[in-house]
Length: 309
Length: 239
Image (cartoon, rainbow over all chains, first blue to last red; front, side, top):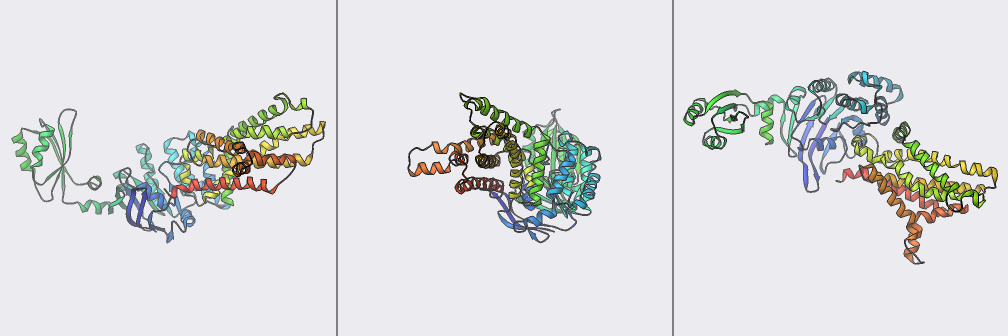
């Protein structure tokens, strides 16, 4: 449905997106994961015809985003990161305006409006002005705007940013619901979100694709490795790091001094190595007191951290 | 065409659902009529001549401050609210957006124009007005306002701050308005400045003459301004 081929976008000397290629199949929900400034928004802006790629090509349903821009735009519903709404307009005025611009014909207008009001749960706010709405409702009006012309493709840029936990769940459900009929690309920097909603994940970092696949595939790609979280008392940070440097098969991921003065440590251990005894001996030798030790399997979060460090 | 109409409708709603249009229109009419009927050493009733040229002389100056206030929000506010990002990904061209917005300002200006009819209507009861001159004056005044608004729209397309758009609009219009005063004599530069000046072309309409050069001047200034506005929107593509 969407083909991105060797796309680069440069702002002067800076490459926001560097030679990325990926495709999205019809009916798929693709989660775009990456730290802030990774190039997620830039990529979405090129797909939605906001700006053309510096090089490479993007086609949507076989149509080129530069040469068939208008046809592509008709197929896409877009919710930018900033949730663009006209503050001074009423909710219905706003939706009617978008329907006008989208050329939703008069005979389908009523039906389209009542559909988006129902899907996005806007019944209670139809008589209000947009500046009166809470953040959650603003986001839903943004959604309503994106689906009013019943597009085949939805592009949602960080649709859950700034919402409270309940609203986040609602929006995720909405994405899943819409994703049953439509092709959806959405971006986020929250791990659980992609895990919860998307069929496939694309991790993007510094303008490049760091990994792609289903959540399970990505987790499997670093399987075998183990992760241990430790809390130590009576250990000094600098000395601890020095000692651990000579410890084989172990990479320090994080060392934090807690409020109590204890040391919270995250360790990555090479596959197939059991360090438990050695670690115990070392602690004894150094007079560290191990308060907590919890091994864990890798989560998607770890994949993300590993890839985007 | 329906794309332009959609944008136009939205702008009209914004003008008339808020006090903007009302404030702008009434401010213009109050100040201009006051200047014309009551200001200076020779107010209208003192000179005792049935001539409404004063309306258009004063009007041109007052409009210099009023027209950019009408147009200042058109693009800058879209940028400020980040709605422009959505608008330019809609299945409409940048020119549709610009023309739709421009048309709405012309309608606001048409209401201003209708408001100034008070003067010629009342005066026609007490004296003899030359209908031809009144008509050509109104055509000139409409073109003048339309040009101001197009320049103001272009200024609005370069900033996300309405105040900046307003002042930029005034400055650019003032430069074009006064250009004929910037070079003296009869040299090439002076002729060029004169011919580029709004004031120079505007004056001709009060003699009851519709010169195609004057018409062409205003129409080209409008087209160039709209083109610049549209290019400013498209600049996102070349960054």
